[in-house]
Image 1 (cartoon, rainbow, N blue to C red):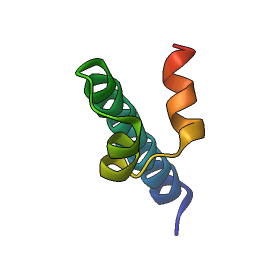
Image 2: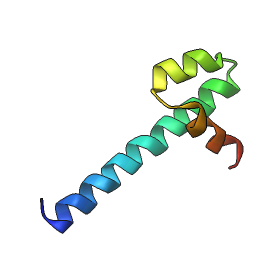
Image 3: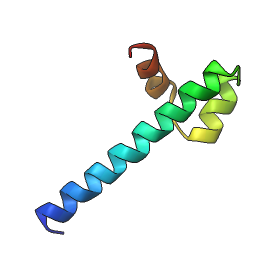
Length: 54
């Protein structure tokens, strides 16, 4: 894998994670349970703690 390909892949993964965090925040704001948010987004409790710090 070239450096450009690696950087592109890292950017893609970061975008996916950012999107999952945004979806999780919307779900939590809508009253969806923490357990369901974790299950549907595949995020961790630590990931969701990041939402509270933003």
